[in-house]
Every structure is written in structure tokens, then in C-alpha cells.
Amino acid sequence: SKVSVIGLGYIGLPTAAVIASRGVEVVGIDVSEHAVNTINQGKIHIVEPDLDMLVQAAVTTGKLRASLVPEPAEVFMIAVPTPFKDNKAPDLSYIRTALENIAPVIEKGNLIVLESTSPVGTTEQIAEWLKELRPDLKVPLDHSDVADVYIAHCPERVLPGRVLQELVSNDRIIGGITERCAEKAMSLYQLFVRGECLRTNARTAEMAKLTENAFRDVNIAFANELSLICDKLKINVWELIKLSNRHPRVNILSPGPGVGGHCIAVDPWFIVDSAPDLANLIRTAREINDGKPHYVINKVKEAADQFKRPVIACLGLAFKADIDDLRESPALDIAEHLINDNVGEILLVEPNIKALPKRMSQHNDKLTTLAKALERANVLVVLVDHRQFKAMHINEVAAKVVIDTRGIFG
Ligand code: SAJ
Image (cartoon, rainbow, N blue to C red; front, side):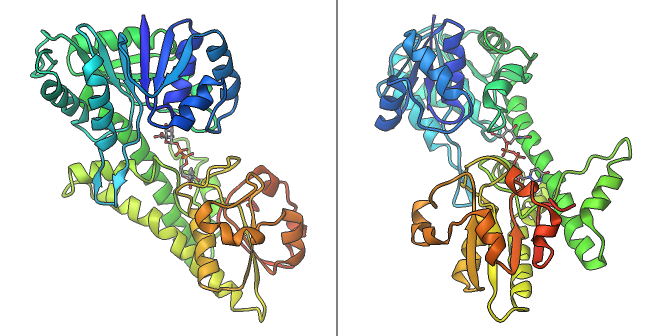
């Protein structure tokens, strides 16, 4: 049988490569010519540990290839972005476009799986759209099991940086529009998932994925709120959380400069958008986490005011530790504000990158090494807990004002 993966990004490409490594023929479809060409040369266009080797092996053995043009297959897996448009509404246009592209090649008996994180009702929406695009096919709606095609939602839940391990070892939620749909999808995932495959309906699967990320967001918001309260009450929040977490039923996550990345800071909004009058805690958590960068910026400004010539070193720009991903990063956001507000001379330290993103390229001269920053700065702002920073000794920073948003100094 043949599997087609639509969207060869952070989720689609690793998934395609893992399935191909199980000996299944996989064709990946993407709109980016660059992505398609790179993959067909056995190389990768994204950063993820060990993915290069896996893709190279799958392409060399002929099990994986990429194409701009959809072709018939038994299974179609959709792994395209679902952004939250201008902070107002979920944007399902990439899913709609993907479906329009594959609709002409879909045949009776095919399985369509949505992997993208999506608002509740999206999988059913796919069925409606398909009905409109292919009136000749009976789609699984109204929970009737007489259908020509099968549609399911199996949300991805891998952690960037550990994608290849988690793709195989995590338990998976398999949500079918109907029982038959779930059954079909179960047999696909059992090909490569070593974790348990848990069967449910599509709406529950959609909500489960959103719930996982909202849970983490709310827990981080709790920690971030504690960090503000502790500042005011002159208590070390890191010590406080460490002590509280020694209770057998307490597990508080860590405060930070804000919540970044493309998932945790986005997905809870899908829930809020679906139930605006009910999702109060979830919305407030988002607001607390989104407000944290401003709090940090103000603290840095206060610290800078103590110096005639403030030299401020921002340690870390990525959205979390030990990765090079600067997208939706609160650390980068804070650094950019400090530069634009002329708070002082700004030094940027990010050991995982060689240059800033394009829109900030005029500030590339501010990028420096940790050693140089330690030599020159009078204010240190720890924004990411990269291992290089954690290796610092407290004595190295003793003479500076330190704003440690990640608690690397405890
Ligand atoms: N963060 C904190 N404090 C913490 C933990 C994280 O401030 O205690 C911050 C991080 O620094 C980062 C942000 O939260 O800015 C998100 O990082 P993360 O490591 O929590 O999560 P992501 O966005 O890399 O991946 C998440 C994962 N979801 C969960 O753990 C519930 C992953 O499993 C999902 O597959 C992924 O979202 C996704 O694609 O939805």
C-alpha cells in the first residue's frame, strides 16, 4: 500500500520518514519546491536531531520521495499548519487547500487522516468539504458507517527536539468520525507506533490535543503568576516551587520570560474561540503568559536605570532551551523591545545561531559570545536556560545585576 503525507514540515516529514522506514511506500506532497527538491536529494530543510539520516536512508532505498503534485494513494495524512489568524480566529485555509489538491485523486476505500492540531469540528468539516468537492463519493457523516472513504483525526503530540523518539514511543489518540474510520486509522498507526493507540471519536481527539497544550499553558501561567507575587513578597520563586513540588500531589512547572513556540501559545485560543463565555481560566492563562515579557522588559529598564552607561546582555533568544528555533520566542521579543526602546547598549548571546532572523538582520553586530558578554555587561538578563548558560558559575556574574527569568542560578 501507499501513504501520501501532505505537508512536509516539522510533523509531516518525520512522520513520512518513519513510515517509509517501516518499508511502506511514502510520497510526500508539499507546495514548496525547495522542500521537495531538498528531500528528493535525501536532505532536509528543517532542523531536528537524526532526521537527516532517516530521510537519507528512506530516499536512498526508494521508499520515500517528495512531489509538488498529488497522486493516488491508499492513505492521505494531512500535516499542514493551522495558525490562529491575526489573533482572531483559527485559520483552516491550509487544510482546505490540501483537501482541494488531493480531492481529484481520492478513490473509494481511501483513508484521510488529519494530524494538524485543529479546533473541534474540523474533521467533520473535512467530510463536508469532501462531499462538496467529490459529490460522487459517500463521506462518513451523521455517524453512518456506510461510506466510500474513511476520515479520522490523530493529533500529533511530539516534542520538537525529540520528534523521532516521541513519534514512535508516545501513545496516540485515534479519533474516527465513525467506528470504521477509527478502525482503519488504528491499523495505520499500529504500523509504526510502539505506544498505545487509544480509540475515540474525532471531536474528542481534537479537544484532547487542545486540552494537553492548554493544561501545560495553565500550569506555566500559574508558575508565572507566582513569580510576580514572589517578586513583590521578596521570596525566591524557584526555591518556593521546588519545596511545594515535594508534596506528593503538587507538580508546578517553571516560570519563564513568557511562553513561546507554535503550539502552547496558540492552541488554547482554539478552545477560547469555540467557547468564549466558558473558557475563562484558559483565556486568563494565555493573558498571564503573554504579559510576562512586558514584566521582564520593565525589570530590565529599572535595572538599567542604575547605570550611567548600561550594557545589557540578553542570554538566549530561542523559544526554549538547547534549540535554534527563534519563532514565536518571548526571549527574542524582549531583546527586540530593549533594542527599540534604547534601554542601553544591548549584547545578544545565542550559541545556537549564526545570524538573526531577516527582520532583525541590521542588529547582527550585537550577536556575541557568552565570554565577551560577561566581560562587558553590567546587566545580565537570562532568557533561555541553554546548557552553556547553566554551566556558568555564580561568581562569574557576582558583580552584575542579574535578571534570571529561568532560575538557572536557583
Ligand atoms: N515553558 C515554560 N515553563 C515550563 C515549560 C515550558 O516557560 O515549565 C515554555 C518554554 O520555554 C517554551 C514554551 O513554554 O517557550 C513551550 O515549550 P514546551 O517545551 O512546553 O512545548 P513545545 O511547544 O515545544 O511542544 C508542545 C508539547 N506539548 C506538551 O508537552 C503538552 C508537545 O508534546 C506538542 O506536540 C507540541 O506542543 C505541539 O506540537 O502541539
